[in-house]
Image (cartoon, rainbow, N blue to C red; front, side, top):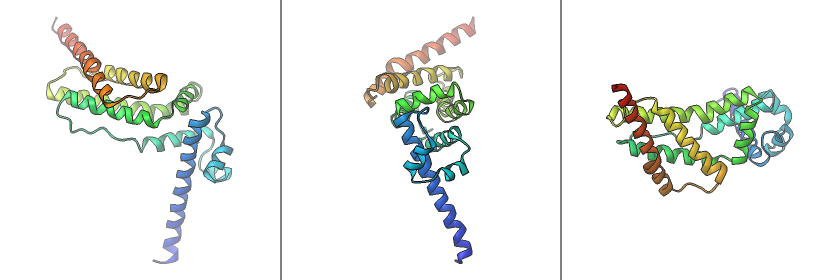
Length: 209
């Protein structure tokens, strides 16, 4: 391999490594200081980079944080599609949501929600990385249940999303007391399945009137 071909590749690798370090530093500082107190100076110092390097890639703090959120979301686990029952799918879904929630810093998440009220770019990034993937998971679970004949109303995806996300907010943002596998199973059996079945029954009853 000649130096001409090796050079650009090496520079690309170094650039990608430097960008990853900057984004990781941004996420760390979000957890420590929150969005409002986060500064480009602090990110540069934490990443061992320069402000010039950061501004060359990202126009401002908002763009940097958006990129960091996307980077973090790409490392989130994906929901398996191999479940053979609604309960199995729901156990997997709640477990995935809990794993994702564990990786989130409550203070950072709260500061991002506040920032999203003022910054459309942050709001869009939060929806794209934290909301839409989980909505899609809920739709997939309901669609698979409909395909198996366990449920009938695709609109139940909204109820599933709201119930599940609400539980995660309580467990990890308000209480911060964790969510064991046994508690997850109890939540599915005692709350999620009864609610979904009740809504599904109401839909079929009203639809037949």
